[in-house]
Amino acid sequence: MDYRRTYVRDLLSLKPGAKTAAFGWVKTRRDSKGISFVQLSDGSGQKDLQVVIPEGSIPDTISSQLTTGACVRFDGEIVESPAAGQPVELRADGCEVYGPADPAAYPLQKKGASWEFLREIAHLRPRGNTFGAVFRLRNAAAFAIHEFFQSRGFLYVQTPIITASDAEGAGALFAVSTLLEAHGQGYKLQSPDPAQDFFGKPAYLTVSGQLEAECLALALTNVYTFGPTFRAENSNSSRHLAEFWMIEPEMAFCDLEGNMNLAEEFVREVIGKLLERCGPDLDFFNLRIEPELLATLRHVVESPFERLPYTEAIKMLEASGEAFEYSVHWGCDLQSEHERWLTEKKVGRPVILTDYPKEIKAFYMRANDDGKTVRAMDVLAPRIGEIVGGSQREERLDKIEARITEMGLPMEAYGWYLDLRRFGSAPHSGFGLGFERLMMYVTGMKNIRDVIPFYRTPGSAEF
Ligand code: 4AD
Ligand code: MG
Image (cartoon, rainbow, N blue to C red; front, side, top):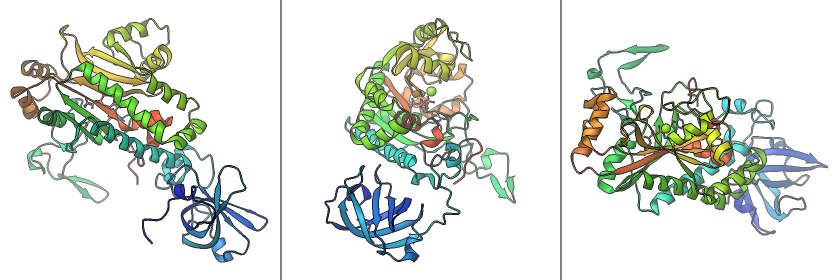
């Protein structure tokens, strides 16, 4: 056996008469007049291979094991398929079962299992149609993202996962410590003193690679990260994960305008590539998950995003006459109901909101001359709300020091970050795109737990 097997996807375009082998998992099996029909999937594409097993062509002891979930190899010949839906099928004359799956126990049997149930079997759900399509799209999106930046001369940089600084200054951190020892069913704290800890000081899983990406941008000009990010927000929403993937470009010699231009090109180009390359999977989501999906995605690729200062958006929300759960006033943080009203009802396509009040944004954003707002930008998308968060960075040493003090953040923890403003500072900007939020947008899936193979949320770290 060799990895150079033919994928099911490619078997479907072989000419009748080809002798071949097909490897995969049985999705369904049906018998009619002594002939068995098996739908075989190896995850390589949206379409399964239909395998026809003529009466007597394989021993009963093997045939009886061809049930949903079993892993098998069929040998046979590609023949024209009389049935609609596929040009060819495989007529089997041999079969080996690698791993049977007891029909009485295999959990992924019935069609129409709930999303909640499928989350409990996240180790098996990739074998289903929907999750196969999600993970193929995720792969295609990751590839398109690298292509987007590489074709523009951005360097892919790797920033640390363990860090001593809180990049967002928001305190939603997971601590990384060796002072906590496994002890029976619980933990034992060796010492409460961070000086005794592995790094000699408190350390955390990163909430963003931005601060380190800034160091690299102020040397290499245009860079991007694409890595895991951790937030200990105790939020059980359908849009938040404790572990998610973020893409963070950072650009020297770039202001908010340039940053918005990049974010918009980025989202539109990546979606455009998926429309070009992932037709069958997107058709599936359009049919089964979100009826407006393809129309929406095409619309996004074709039309420019609306750009709007926060202050204008607040006025629109106040004048909307909608009964929001959270009331709106200048200075409030927008809730997803507000973001969705703006993009879905008011504008009808993605919106970039800019110039937010400084109180609701991170310490590193560049101050505007009004003393009240900062050069922030969030891209809001219909159905999802915030998909991108970014800003022009405060490159002036005195201003950023004043802001850190004003916010009560520990100045000493940001010493190296301030050095960037001490030595060869430059105007610069960047943003973060939540990869899973993008995947929700392009698949139409309603819960962020269903667009990542293994989700981490409060109370869930199985698998
Ligand atoms: O707006 P955020 O917090 O921005 C930053 O972290 C900046 N340091 C990025 C930068 O400028 N380099 O997060 C960026 C994006 C959000 O817009 C959202 O798409 C996603 O990351 N995100 C999450 N996705 C899933 N689960 C969570 N808990 C998320 N928190 C943020
Ligand atoms: Mg944000």
